[in-house]
Image (cartoon, rainbow, N blue to C red):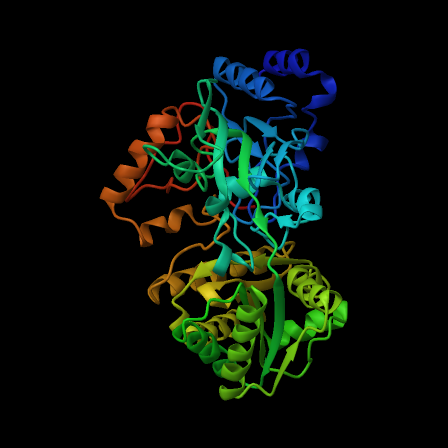
Length: 477
């Protein structure tokens, strides 16, 4: 990194907002994935104008820029694969406006997901997208990855709750797309940009929809002695035309680990459980809950519990959302996968995941969004053991390939990033990549923003140039 660039960044932002020592940079070479990539300098803007000035400086020195939120991502999407300037939005963390009457909020990208709900819950509103990391992940990162969560089944992904964006383009121009009301006139540029993983623009302001709390929420826990019975229950709920607000599945081994950690009231001797939630007007929610109870029992659920009150409900969800913390007691690290399969293939997929794990010498936990077939197998391993680490990476790839072979997809909510970019050729043709490349180049022709992400960078189908700004891509460490 040119010392002159660091000097100019410090002059622009102040020394306290620029990190360049090796010790500081090491903290930013990781996210929640198993990937690794160290930036050359880390900066903390406070305003949109700061972001635009940083982009101008980076362009002048011909170095890439990577936007980053809280670093909770699980695909390496916010890592500096080719070095350069890492632009961290942690200090752009203000809620700029709350329009409660029209159910809208305008926020900076560094606002933590759950803080939006906390700011509006007094008015009976909340922000619906709820990743398991919602206590720490930021809305800017949610927009970049099009994050989901347990309630995606009924509420949709982040893209369904964003109506307008303020952007800094790769040439430092500041633009706005979308509008407060969300009625798209012309091209839906918000839809294009949400989920683009920071490869098209840097998002500096987000307008989101707020959702009114339901009159009644009912949470059910169905306990099964066979994984197949739980899977068939999910398929039958869908076939009956019932769309729960959430439909989560956990296997028995994972459940026991969580219960030993949290004492959330989960059974330790089951093969699987379904955590289901319905919400809406009182009569409709009660009717749906009764129908789901009936379907679960018809598919041999040995027990169906209904949360007695909000405290009981919160405890069940605490168990689901703190699963990774529980797994952290069993191994030095874990690799959380993200693949999608048709719901009808759940029994086959879980059986094959078990076989793949056994063959590789790993015990794999399963906790996932059963309602939309979004699997999250968890591989426990020790990253200090190079052979074991390589085996974990190979096992993960085998599982994702299996998901695609069953008619599924590479990712449901974690994004492509560095983790799956080389597997994109499993789903997309040369023609597909050509179209995506043309869109990418219309926004980011020099690949100055987040190079080496989403598109394959190795030789072969769909290769996209990394660009003049990027150094040789780093491999997994």
